[in-house]
Structure formats: structure tokens, C-alpha cells
Image (cartoon, rainbow, N blue to C red; front, side, top):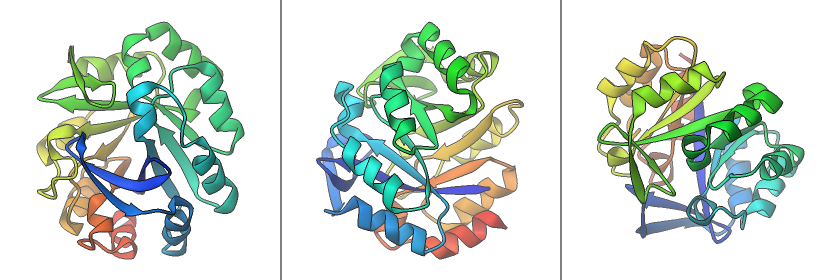
Length: 238
């Protein structure tokens, strides 16, 4: 299983939110590039980036940080947060990003998603953020009447190869991830699932790995010292 250490960006800083609440933000570093270098030094191969400002308003205020990480490390970078145009996707890919994660726009504009997948194939992933089984958009501030499993099946039919599935209720809470949900998701054929939200122990990582999931995202537990990244990488690789 791949492990994706996460850096959430806000105002050019490394931050974490609690359950997607922008009023409950903790700043972990003023230097995201240095944080990325540390992840690489610990043996990380992938990096999961989220532009939290972009997720809210559809802009790219942290683009220069993302480009610097791509330029100054050998990490394979995936980026999400407010990416709502083909031009923005292309700009990120040209900056060295390996994979772009679409969120709100993938849910609300099927033609756009089909066009993006047609152009860039497996370099397009979709973030599926779920609250009580429904899909949330716009930085998690709006929950739609769209069943997450129905949406995943649609993504698969459109040719999307990778989905990052977040259980918002677990994100940043340090109370474990939603293992029953990911067990169910692990049985979906034809689409790679990355678990996101609430991974807080090595046991969580081991359980997700044993389900055969494609990947898991490690965030807050890495920053508060609950999990050492090197140990997590060892467990994920089995």
C-alpha cells in the first residue's frame, strides 16, 4: 500500500483542520518546502498536498509553494483544492505535479471531468469527501444529496482510476479511521481507493494495508508525533 504524507496549505503555511472546520486550524510549520524535504529524507516517495484556500474559493494562492516542492524534491506530488479549470490542471502538471485531484468541479460538472480524464488519463484523480455517506463540496462546507457509492461507480464508468475518499467526521480527530467504510470500498473493482481521514495509529495503517487498499493518507498523527513517518512507511510497505 502506498502511504501519502499530507501537507495542507493555508497562507503559505503547513496547517491542519479539525473535521474540515476552518475555525479550528493548527499551524505546524511556516515552511512547507522544508516539511516536504523532511518527508523525503524519511523515505517518503509521494506527497499529498491540499490548498485549503483554493478549496474554498477556487483560486491558487499557494501555487508557488507547490511548484517549489516539485522543483526542490524528488517526491511525486498530488495536489487538490479548488482546481476547477483545465488551464489550472495544465498549469499544475507543467509545474511538475504528478497527479491532480479534482473535487467540487468533478461532482458538479461531469463534462469537465470527462474532458480532463480524456486529456490526462491517470494523472487525474477525484477526491470524494463524505459526510454521513453523502458527498461534500466547496471545502466541505456544502453537503449534496449524492450518495458516495453511486458517485464512485459513476467515476469508474468515466475512466477515473484513483479516488481519495475522506470521512469528514474522522478527519483530524485522532480517533481512528473508518475501517468498516474502507473495507466496503476495498471491494470496488476498477478504481484505486486511497483512505483519508482519521489515520492515527500504525494499527490503522496495517488494517488498511491488509484490506488491499491502494493508499492511505497520513496527516495530523505525523505532525503531533503519534506516528513516526518512517514506521508508517515500513508498515504500509508490509
